[in-house]
Image (cartoon, rainbow, N blue to C red; front, side):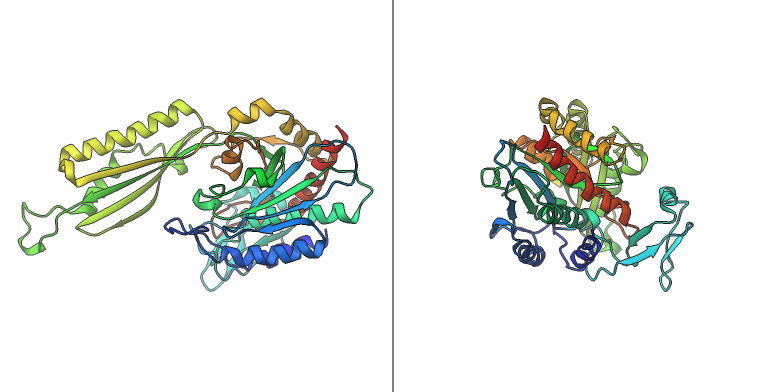
Length: 407
């Protein structure tokens, strides 16, 4: 485990934020900086079949050390970080947590407060890795990468542990919904896989949101404000009318567990034209389809008010709930549950209030539930991860591989 934290700290300092507005693949070339770094590390560990393609997918193999017929397992994590908060010049801090609030940045008065994040009190007496408050940390999903590599290193250093072939895959652009767009399932060659991309200790997930996006283009008419009476159509004010059509109770800050939502992620605009970008989420497929219908209905209301040519909407599906696929392959989840318990980890099977590469991969033919990394507060400046949870994630990965070999 001695290299686990060292690895993680190296990875988070490499700038890998993806870009949802990019037309290239990967969306940012900087993601390849981490891929190249990781490729060298995998080579130093002596892994086989290492490949880094022009799309930024890094794959490698830990060969089986037994002649017994054992399923090929895949371990997958993503290299990019969320564009919602800066991932440039990350300055991680290692803190021996004594309880109470944590001052992340004195100069900017950025404080991780227990009143807002009470779960942090569970880690009193433990070592935490946090941000300095000016960026996200990037445990989503660089913790997953560090944990996978450390688990593989442990198996290499303990050849008495019998295991089958293990395939490793590190992907770009998961945070912008494109992580599996060019993933070569056949080349990866696993029978099933696990994404290591979850949250707190013990999380095990095999169902996720159905996801879609809706982008509205609102077209106004610009006239000098001094002579604009009965002439101007202000697209920025149209935005306010549009937002008022959506139920306030169905937003991320007002929902939990299996409740879906509409989430405004970006608004840009001038008097002449404004754009509003939503993401739509629901675990239930019928409710998901209904939410998309509401988006269309709201576009029609706006058209009727402002004119047919002043409102456009583009609704696109992003991914679907992998529960349907995983339920046909529940033995994969059972392996993880058994492994967790053998490590002294209480499994918490919860729905993902988001999506992972595993959701799309499951529908592409690679069943792929998700396991914890140990992190909290992803996508924000208050992100943190307990070192002990990272160590438990490594143990869980190793144990899953052992359970599969012993089945």
